[in-house]
Image 1 (cartoon, one colour):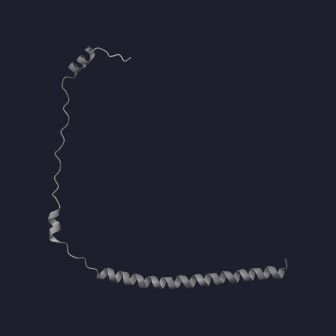
Image 2 (cartoon, one colour):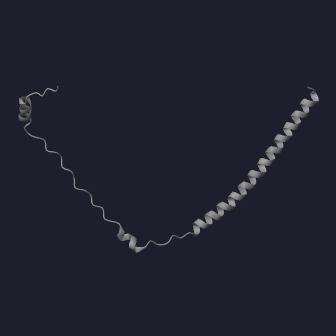
Image 3 (cartoon, one colour):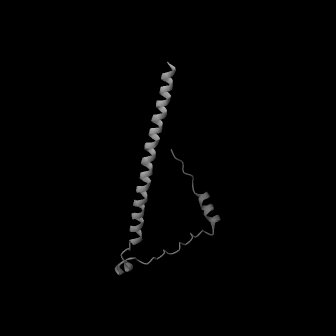
Amino acid sequence: MSVARIAFGSIASKATLAARTNVVRSISSSAAMNKDVIQDLYIKELKGYKPAPAAKAEEGAVKELKLPPVAQAPAVDADIAEQLAKYDAEPEEVSQ
């Protein structure tokens, strides 16, 4: 390739790169200005919002919370030795 062709290619690529950055910059700056206007309108509407008062009928619609009774601990048999003796006295079952 000739030196002129290489030089022209590098100049052309720099020019297109510069043109692309200018386009991007102009689009992003206008978008930022539009964002502020929309944001200001939104904040203005939020500040002006006043919710409707709650109706009196809704207050009595909720039932009062009643907790279930506390569970009792299971009773443990006091005479475990007697139960073990009965178990030992049972005949063994053989499966076929």
